[in-house]
Length: 243
Image (cartoon, rainbow, N blue to C red; front, side):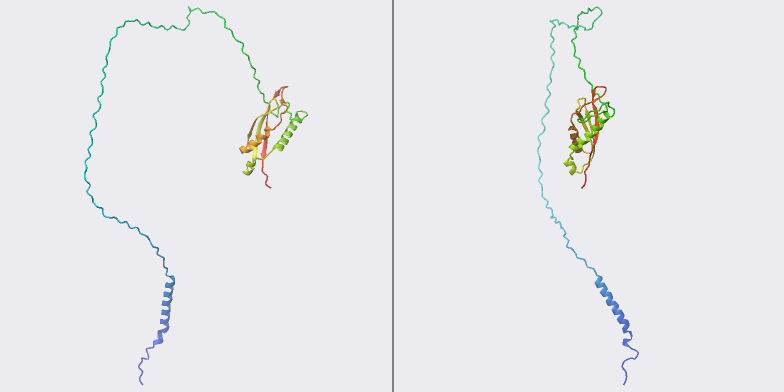
């Protein structure tokens, strides 16, 4: 029996190579299919301007008749007529007399009375500093010598501040605080006048001035056996305490 196939022709000889190539091709196609990206296309509205053909219309030519301007008004010519009047009446010339006094003028001797003028004496208010005055203003309830009166005065001022001190509600709500310096004058009658203040806010200044204006009338300070005005200043510290 004769063999029909060529023994050298082995079909399965390169099967592993073909299998590897086919496997790689399939993997490549799978990778490309997975990594392929597509994008959504949004519909875009395009405005199309349709321009119709212009129709040429024959516009009739019209003639506008404009009336000519009126002629300019003629200027009236005024002729001056000069009339000659004969000078009949004599005009008297007015003579201005000089008011200056010459050497030949006689001066009338007369007595001029001088009325008595009342002279009002204005007393000048003398101010003596609190630190150097001979006798400081005496706060009600204070006794002793000048040094004791000074210490008592300062103590009574502190008690007065603690008694009448009231923190402004608006300033507390706005967290306004600080030190206010108050200046005032104890005049020669013992009254507190000319109260001024300087501080971080107007609300605190107003409260400090209110407290000082409540001070009682004192016995005025004395310098060289006479009543004098005494200026004084005190700081008032407005401080909010957090609980």
